[in-house]
Image (cartoon, rainbow, N blue to C red):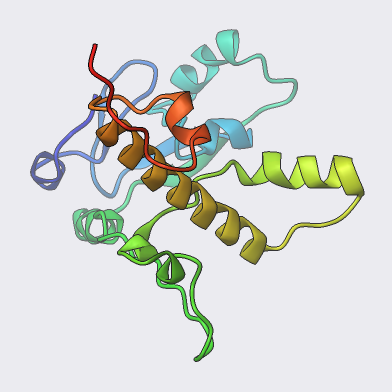
Length: 183
């Protein structure tokens, strides 16, 4: 069950026991499993007693495990950790190129500087490696993306010229716009 940040701030306890669901208060002793997979952020098993820890062994299938003593954080530390975990705005990817070099998108004319890579990089690299045993640079991927953008624009124009709202394979293979024909 996902809680909102406001609900997390208003909690009167740190967490609940993974077995019996009793509330674990702030600043109290609790137990964790010695196996690292039980301690992970996703699993995060917490137990109020050794008996509750022992109950999880029936389904955990550990070869060798123990109950480790731990302390829940104080309310202040808990609230501080919520602020640290609050989602941060995503950083915008900015490509820095030496002066005098045009980006693949800028030479296509338009606002493609924000266009993501439109090819499956691993597949392109694998094809080139299989065909020639050569490596592939990122600028080759950028140039290929530029070609895809140019071909898509041509195909859009061909579909418009044909009076359609759907881009078809024949629009990509045609080099010049198709004249609309009356039916």
